[in-house]
Every structure is written in C-alpha cells, then in structure tokens.
Length: 219
Image (cartoon, rainbow, N blue to C red; front, side, top):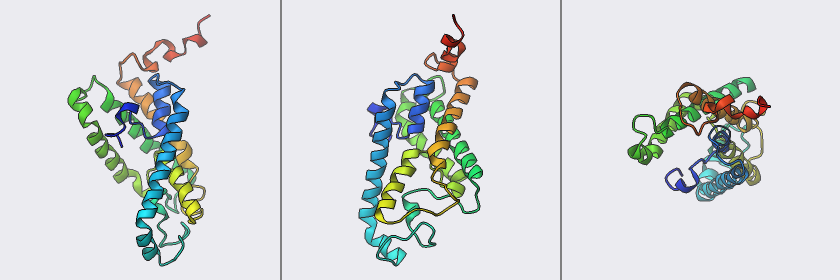
C-alpha cells in the first residue's frame, strides 16, 4: 500500500493523517476524505478476502454460516482484532496506545531528512523499513490486542464481518471501542514526543513560537 499510494502520502491510517494535520500542517480539509477512503479501502479488502477464502473458511469452521467471534473455531480474527479475554479495557487501551505511539514516532523518524539514511535512498526504502516497524510492533504487542493501531483497519473489516454473519462479541468486553480511540491518542503522543525531543524542522507546530498557538497569548 505504501509503494502504490505515494501521491497521497501513503497514510493508510486516520490516526496518522490526524497527527500530520495536528503536528505537520497537513491540510485539515483532507482529513475527512482520507479517512473515508481508508475506511472504504479496508472494507473492500476484507470483502475480497472473504470471497476468495469462503470455501476454506467454511471447511475450517465446519459450519455453513460464519461462527460468532466467541466460538473457539471462528475465523473472525482474520478480519478484525479481538483482545485476549483476560485483558481489561484499560489494558487494551494501554497496549494500543503504546503500539500507536511507537508507530508514529518511527514514522516521523524515518521521514525526517535530518536523520542518517533519510535522503533519496531512505525515501526509496521507506516502505521496506515500515515493514520491519510493523513486524516488530506486531511481535511485541500483537498477542494482547492484535495491534490494530488503525480505526479503519479494524472497524471497516469488523463491519463487513458483521454483515457477513459473524455477529459481535468476542474478546475482552467492548474491545471494538479501543481501536477507535487509542490510535489517535497514541499517534498524537508519539509524534509530539519525536518533535519535542529530536525534530528541528520548521514544518512542525511544536517548533513554532508557542507551539503554533501564539494567537492564544498575543493581544
């Protein structure tokens, strides 16, 4: 997706788009369209996956209709993330917050032209580097919540799976709410932390006088 969506900035995640608007002066007018596009893309992809693997899913579940996420042999986690049953909603939020913060911190680091390797070669290898970032985050945080880190990646396919007959439920109660909020908080914090600690570019509102909110203190 990153390789093929370069003209738009390859956000693929409304939390990243939101953070770019908040900290990198990305136009706020683009946020609704980007979010809608990301949601529709995730829904389309999940529908294609179900159509392609319908026979295999039916064989594995042993049922002519999709099994509820609470069933031990359900294939619902193919489409959406379901937190471990032992995890509280606070634990779910913390896990998604940390994963999202690390994601945004590293995205800003890899896009920072002041860093080693962020020149032309770095730009060409950015998608490859992001593969290792996502792989590493998944290896560290995937067990507890499935590391959604993305509202549209979780909610879009979750809607499709609900319409297909999987229903709701599964995982730690109400786990679907966490991926709708935690990625925005986590990405904002991770991006802000990078700008405060390391970034010197003028395009960051953190580096502007009064963090870009001078109008609040100036007469």
